[in-house]
Each structure stands twice: as structure tokens, then as C-alpha cells.
Length: 191
Image 1 (tube, rainbow, N blue to C red):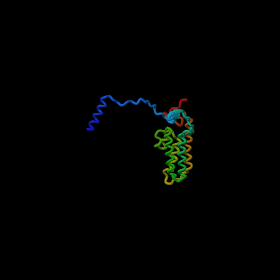
Image 2 (cartoon, one colour; image 1 turned 120 degrees about the vertical axis):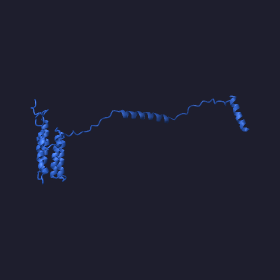
Image 3 (cartoon, rainbow, N blue to C red; image 1 turned 180 degrees about the vertical axis):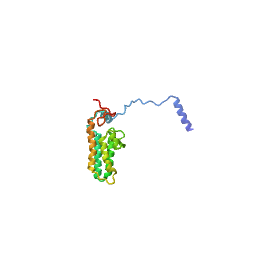
Image 4 (spheres, one colour; image 1 turned 45 degrees about the horizontal axis):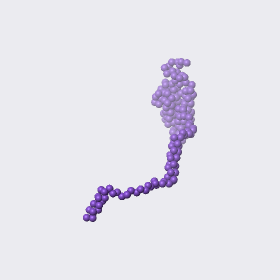
């Protein structure tokens, strides 16, 4: 019955509106140390400094950029590489002449003669690439002869001359004409 009495007494006390007396003392909020204030201000300043650093205008460093190589320079370099490969023993005379002919055909194609990669010397000649055609024709004998006896230094020089002279001709070309100064239709250029 003690248990019943305990519950009964509790219920009786709750129904009588007899709450325990309130504590009339007011307590001040817990004082924060000055350290927390300093940490908060420091965090705000660090955030502002980071934002300024991110959005600040940046000085562009001047980087020296090499001028782009011209198509002529690229092919002259290829011919020099072929000469180095010949000197190093990576190419024999026959393969050198194959590569020189292929390089000149590729050069003719890259400088405006459509389909020059697969043209014979006669087709290059018909397309107005007379110097390239003559050089390719001169490389045929060493390419297909049973024993190559060509002067490789002369062959390299001829290939370089084709590109060098072609570069000089290109700077003197009249717009609307081929490399020989003739319009593609065979008419005379209008001045």
C-alpha cells in the first residue's frame, strides 16, 4: 500500500495546485572570456582577407613566345632531320631519296596543290610545281636503281632549294595566280 499511498499523495499534491515556490533570484548570463571575442574578430578578418586575395586583379607575367614556324621552316627542318638520319646510318641512299620525294610532295600539298601527296613528277609539273617536279624526277633514279650512286649531299641541297626558292616565289606571287604567275584558267593575270 505504500506504493498506492505514494501515488495518491502525488496526485493529491498536483491537484491542489501546490507547486514548489519559484526561485526569485535572477542569474546573469555566463560571461564569455575575451579570448572568444578575439577569435571571432580574427576569423572575420581572415575571411575578408581571403575574399580580397581571391578577387584581386592579378598581374600577368610576360612569357616570351616564340614566333610560329612557317610551313617552309617546318619542311626545311624535316630535310635537315633526313640528313641527320643519313649521317647516323638510319637511312640508306635509296630510302633517303624516297623520303625526300615524299617530303617534297607533302610540301606541295600543304602549300596549295591538292592531291600532291600521290602525284607523279609529271602530275606535279602539270599542276604548276615545276621545281618540285624536277627534284622528284631527279630522285627517281636513286630510288629505283639496283645500286644507288647518287650524291646525297646534292640531293639534300636540291630539296632545300625547292623549298627555299618556293618561299621566295610565294612572297612575290600575284593574288589569283599559281606559282608561275599564271591564272588557273590559263588567262593572263589582270593588273
